[in-house]
Length: 168
Image 1: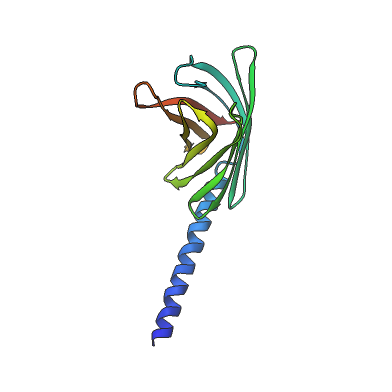
Image 2: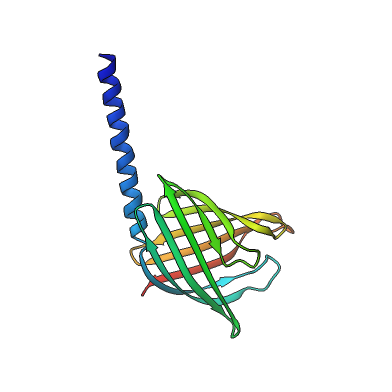
């Protein structure tokens, strides 16, 4: 009797795990496509805010998400940026490229309509090496990218980047 109870328990866990992976794959697929939008970026909490226009191509599989794009600000500034994430269940890890400090490590999880990621910068930014990135699905055709960092002067968290993208 004990072995059949274990079998049923294992089977239930396997079904639940497969359902979670299927839901994650569906969530990731909703990011697939071309996106464009505008936003504001601060290189540090003391720097002035720069308005930017961005374009992104997003690709996904059932276990990964890639955002590759370019943001332009002012007349002379242009920067290629990308984030490549892999998932294991609702846990995410990957790399962000485009920071002046070098490639940054990303780790976090999916909750609701967003992927919440800790960014570990290659070198300190604003006096520390950690910030937060939220990749939020907005309806069926939008993505909101938000970076929050710690302001060493005030001790408060501040938004240093916010880019609102729409499917093109």
